[in-house]
Length: 91
Image (cartoon, rainbow, N blue to C red; front, side):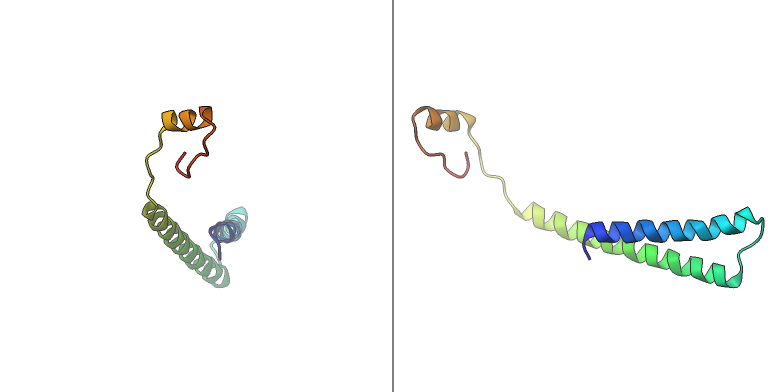
């Protein structure tokens, strides 16, 4: 799954979990065993989605850090354009 899909999944799970809690509060009662079990399962799925999002983010950060920025000279780029020379990849 992509990070956007995981974020969407997490949001949907959060909405479901909140609806379970809201139903109990609206009726001024404790959650039933089934509701409590469903709520706990949703919380576990939310935690799993969070962990996957963190893993993807850290992986992307590591890959991004590997790319190295080369020096860029604005003066050289302007000079190349002024003298009708092709710009190299750095410019």
